[in-house]
Image (cartoon, rainbow, N blue to C red; front, side):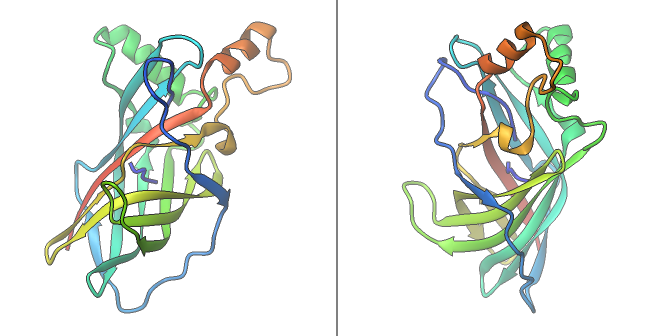
Length: 214
């Protein structure tokens, strides 16, 4: 899911975002008498991916297909978003052919295996009021990608009004391998293919930018 607001690589091209706390999937408890806010069109997750030892990175977006937030007493208390993995785009490569090749590779079985897993999902488990440098909350939720679910915890800035919800999460990292996103992860992979996996950083950076309407 959100991830958002992603999802792909970092390198020596810049500082790598800190990886969030990751654990086993947690139980989601539905909150009674909450008001539902529908996720608005245009909500997305920004991603950044990169190689570990060279100055090489790529960035892009993944659209959020649908979702909602549960609001009670002026606070977000639950919700989920469905991420359209077919909507992965690259935004830094100007050459359409090269950009298309990268996106095709990301959609392939080598990475997100979109043919078998066309969507990802993020479901909120808990929201805690906790002030940070540019945030007011800590969000705990279950992120499902490629059929694997893990819980993640990250800071976010959440604003609730009578008409909507603004949910933004500063850039954070996840270890893609914990969701089975591994380049040429198979027993018959050649040495060259295995080396490519080692060159691609295991961290994917994500940045959620989500709005919802009452």
